[in-house]
Length: 268
Image 1 (cartoon, rainbow, N blue to C red):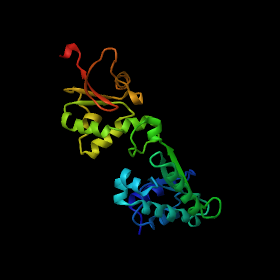
Image 2 (tube, one colour):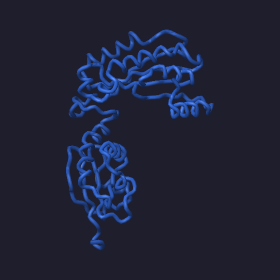
Image 3 (cartoon, rainbow, N blue to C red):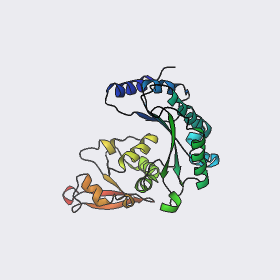
Image 4 (cartoon, helix red, strand yellow):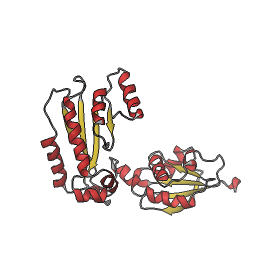
């Protein structure tokens, strides 16, 4: 089966540049694993599958979407299948297959079992530049011991971003009923794209965030001290003078808080 046109165009473009680039894909496993044969033939160098957790019961609980749509067994089969593709394709192109887990979401012995599973089964021999190698990227997210946070699934790889994304879905849910199209939403650079993600998941318009009105009825600001995004920093980043700004608390969440920027006296 041919690749989807967008995949073909991307790979063809990158490989046609002739710059010696190493090209990789990180995606959920495709239903038709034969498509990875074609990617290998085109010169792709790496595929990565983030199955996150090796314990099946914990996988079901923390990754319900991946469990329902693919299953842990299918992720592992995709890793196994792609690892052996190093024996095929352009011999001058390196080939790497990654199976990625997140340390801290399951007992250590389960993570070690995942590493052993990959090491024992997915390192077929072959020429050094073309053999399939299976690697484990154990992202250092020790949620319970390091941050005290509950073991929520989160694909960010540092403590700042874990904090930032812990309850942004709740923030979006609140804004869905309280944010008007005439409002402007001021969000710092670390939080804007994660918040936009939850806006889109909830089918909310992003105009207040990305294309706010020139003279908004209200200016709502999102701050989060836990990720070094205090009110003053967000204001300065977005072109406001913190010394002249006056804000009032609208709603406090576990980590971030929403504020309303009060207009200057001349505009009241």
